[in-house]
Length: 272
Image 1 (tube, rainbow, N blue to C red):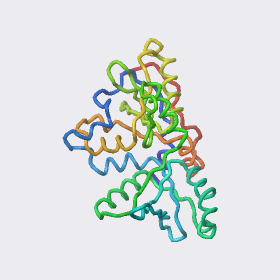
Image 2 (cartoon, rainbow, N blue to C red; image 1 turned 90 degrees about the horizontal axis):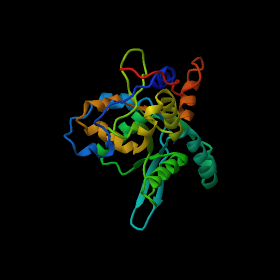
Image 3 (tube, one colour; image 1 turned 135 degrees about the vertical axis):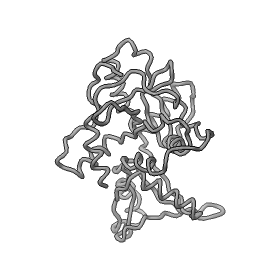
Image 4 (tube, one colour; image 1 turned 60 degrees about the horizontal axis):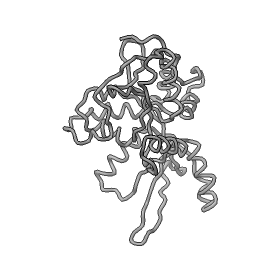
């Protein structure tokens, strides 16, 4: 969890917003058919390490495997929640009713998205029959669904883990922000639509003439992870996954002396 604590300090550094962003990665979910040069696995893990996820474990630290039967077979599943509150509600509202004796021994355990990624990769190698599932926050799924419906895809439900990205319409490029001292800038992919809206609103105040050229795009986390694994575009390394405000608060609770906050700072004048 040390990297999560470091991330808690980094999130307070976001400052000015750069007009233009990086081009060439506008269709992330579809990048999987490109030549598979990808990012090195250690770089993918490093990016995913900054996002907490939450699962249920027993006193031995073992994952809780839930099984259900359908007509032909038994399906075994381990759930990893984007929201700690959702994991706790699942324990309190479902498991404690179905099996109170078992539920009394369980706890919500924080891991990182990188841990989940490595577990899934190992599962594929071993042909593990257990399904490791990421559970999105329903409010953000609804926001993503609403966006699809507003963009002409009426009746379509968003399936997956939504990420929200402020971008420019004309050249299909993204807003970028600094996350550390120096000139290097990154493309934030937010787990909450509200965070993306806040960043875009700050940009519009700083550069009002570009306001009509901006929008928020919703993409699937699984598509982004696939792109990290398969894209031959070096710009893919500029992506930063920005945790939800709930998760930021959790991260900072691991380091009580860190400053509060977590939202990008007000936009300054654009600069190269």
